[in-house]
Length: 126
Image (cartoon, rainbow, N blue to C red):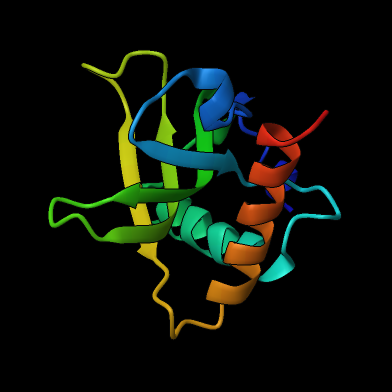
């Protein structure tokens, strides 16, 4: 579970709350309705970052998202995005890693299903 890492802060905004244009994203959460395989891949990436950089996460912020965006060639890309940072993006810690989810990846179907469910709930809710 993501909460086991005990980050000082965990970002929970989605693209509709943040006002960002050109990118769609939702936070990766510990909730039961979030796809387990995607969360496990995110936890694998987080664990690798924390171990490789020997981080004290109690003083850092975690931003773990599933993201869909149009790349420089106009093709849509799907990814898991992990950013671990502190309050100072200029002089402090900023570690970023992405995992691209292709159509052939076993994570693609749960990724797409969850993503579309979130968009439907937010954009088309009454």
